[in-house]
Structures are given as C-alpha cells and as structure tokens.
Picture 1 (cartoon, rainbow, N blue to C red):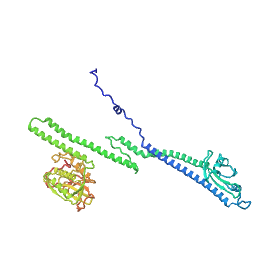
Picture 2 (cartoon, one colour):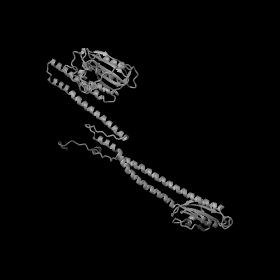
Picture 3 (spheres, rainbow, N blue to C red):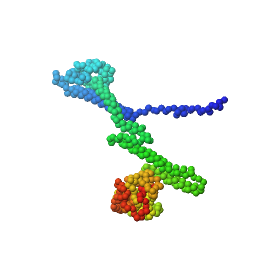
Picture 4 (cartoon, rainbow, N blue to C red):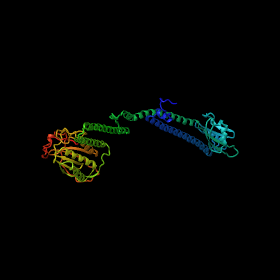
Length: 537
C-alpha cells in the first residue's frame, strides 16, 4: 500500500530528458586565426613539396640526358675511328681488333664515372685508372657477359654495387682476326647522389621556410583579425542600456569596411532602442494624466443623472484624447521604417487643390488658394496630404475666426514646396526651435487657443517631410505678420518638366528674432490673443 502522506507517482526520467538536462558540452572551437594558419601551412606544404619534387625530376632528367649524351658521343667517336682511323705504324687501316682497341683506349680521356673497355675473346682491355665504384665493370664477369650477349646497342644494368648505363660497338675485322667489342659504361651512382643531395637540401630549406611562414602567418593573421576581435569584444559589451560602443576604423580595406558596416548597424540599433524607449516614456508620461482624470471622476461619480452624464462625457473626451495620442505615437514610431513613405508621381496642382478642399472644412477661416505649381513631383500623396492638413489645422487652432490662411505650392529648379501661410501673431522666437520636438508646445498664455494638443502634430509633419529623400520642413515669417510652414522636397529626376515659377525669397527665421519684430497683426485678428501657441495639437 502507498502512504497517503507521500508524494504522487513520479514519472521515470527518460534517456532524452537526462540528455537535455545535462549540461551540453561545447565542442572545442578552432579560432579563425588557427584555421587561417592551418590552411596556409597546408597550401605552402603542398607548394613546397611540389617544387622540391619537380626540381628533383628535372635534375634526374638532366643526369639521364647527360649520360645518354656521353655514351652516344663515345660510341660515335669509336665508330668514326673504326671507319677512318689508320695504324700509325703501317699508315694503313687497322687489320686487327686488338690493335684498334688498344690505340683508341690510349688516346681517350674519359670522365671519372666513365669506363671504357675492349672485349676480345676472353680478354678485357681497359684504361689504367681508378674507377669510383665498389665493383668496376671490368671485374664484373656476369655484367660483361650480359652486355656481350645482349642484342641491344645500349641499355642499363641494376646491380647491388651500383647501377650502370652502357653502350657497345661490335668490331668485325677482315680475315681470320678475332672479333671484338667496344663497351662504354657510365656509373650513375655519384650523379644520382648529387641530384638527391640537392633534393634533400631543398627539402631542408623548405622546412625552414615553412617554419618562418608559420611564424609570419601567425603574426599577420593576428594583425588582420585584430579588428574582428575588436568587433567581437564590442558586441560582447553591448547591452540594451549601453549601445554607444563603436569600433575605430583604420585604413580602407575590407576589415575597415566591416567595421564601418558594424558601426552603421550599431547606429541603427541605437536609434531603434532610443525610439522604443522614447515611445514608452512618452506614452507613459502623456497617458498618465488622462488615466488619472478618468479614474478620479469614476471614483467620485454619484447617482445624480446629470452628474453621471457629465462624467461620462468627460471620460469619453479623455479616452478619445488617449486614442489620438497612441495613434500619433505609433505613427511617429513607423517613421523610422524605410517604407514609411512610398513616393510616386503626383500632380502638384491636383494635390494642392485637394488639400485646400479638405482644409476648408476644418474651421471658420478665410481659406484662400494661393500659388499653384504645375507639373509632376515625386511624393507620397497620402503622407503629404496628411502633413498639409495637419499644418492647416495647426494654423486654424492658433488664429481667430475669419483670419486669412493661404495654401499653395511652388516649384523651383531644385525643390518643390508646399506651404500653409497664416496671418496670425506668429511664433515666439524662443519657441521656434522647440515646436518640432515631440510633446513640446509653444509658450501658452491664458486664453490662447489650441492649448489642449499633445504636441505631436508638428513632429509628425517633420517626420513625413524627412521621410522623403532630402525632404525638410521650414518655418518662416509671413510678410505683414504670421507664420509660414513649408514642406520642401528636392525635385526628383522622375518628375516631368514643368514651368518653373520664380518667387522672391521669403526671409527665414535664421536665429529666430523676437516675436515683437514680426510686425503688427492684421486687423482681421485684432481680437486674437497677444501671443499664439507655436505647435500642433
């Protein structure tokens, strides 16, 4: 029986579980430096061995050719002596083989390894000198018998005492004189030993060279791979909190290109993490207030129907504002993606007219269609429309009713410009540098319009402008008072040629002078606030 207080039945541990639970043994890794050195050693060993073997073959061939030449020369000289030679005692041709061989052997100067013999019957005629061989041919009866009986004129003979190469010429004198044979033999041992000695010397030199190459290759490989180790070390030091490490770039080789590519990847990672952190921080900061408002009103909501209706309306407004903030933040986050904008051919006149028609429904203002450019530009029509409508809404929020707001486009040789021009109080000089940042608003005074925005509108406009290659957003003062926001995109090569309109240069803010120098406000906004907010909702 099992005890009731014990644990339940346990599943037996399988072999697979034991294998996966056990710490995995890492295979020994061979570093790139060692692999490079091993490959270098293999290649150099094969190359040096091939050179040494080829050199030995060439030397042996030269030895063989030299011996063949010596044998042929001696045989030809003897044959010529037989045909044209004369006995100095008689002044006539030789009549006996012995006299012919004796005189020829006396006159010849042979090489040290060369042996000249005359064979007549059972006797051997030779030069009186030492032969550098353990067993000279004239003492080797078996070898002499083999040569004499052979039907070939030349040949080779392998002996334990040393190999020889030979050639022979038979002598057939007239009359009853005995026949003879002239034999020239070459002992190849010393010549082959010299070739083998050169081969061994070459092998020794190759071994020393291989060791030197090993040391030099180790040092060079370490120097070449030093940036790679630096990349590895830098990657190991990278964390989500610290992406500032960079690799120093030296030179213009492949390793320098690798370091530049790695640094560019780190830049993208740092921007991506910064965007993510900024999104979380901004979302947390901006959503905290409406969440607190919603919670507070819901906690204090009573049973009075009027109070409940007012609370529901207020909560709905806050939730709508939270939704807009989240949508704007998501849009700004997408601005980091390469497919944020999708440019294509757009008719400038049609785009300008569409923006004007949509802007007229935003507020009760004196909307006017200003200059309209002709031709085609390379733009993302949806993103550009979104940015222009945002600028128009921004102008409507910070101007009084019936204030004139102009929408237009113009084209120069280098750029295409879409702009929204209002005649309001303008932008404070202190705010002009800040209004394009996220959650940054212009200085707001009591009674100013547009105070309820989250401060993301102009950030979206800037992201859309800079999403186009070479695009930018510009803030300028309007002649007579007000502010002009312009989106400028370089004229793309794909755009059709159109008439280029020349406009006078509008003075840019530059270092943003004080707002009091913008000029007096127009009469249409005499009742507007003294200062305006310089950013979008």
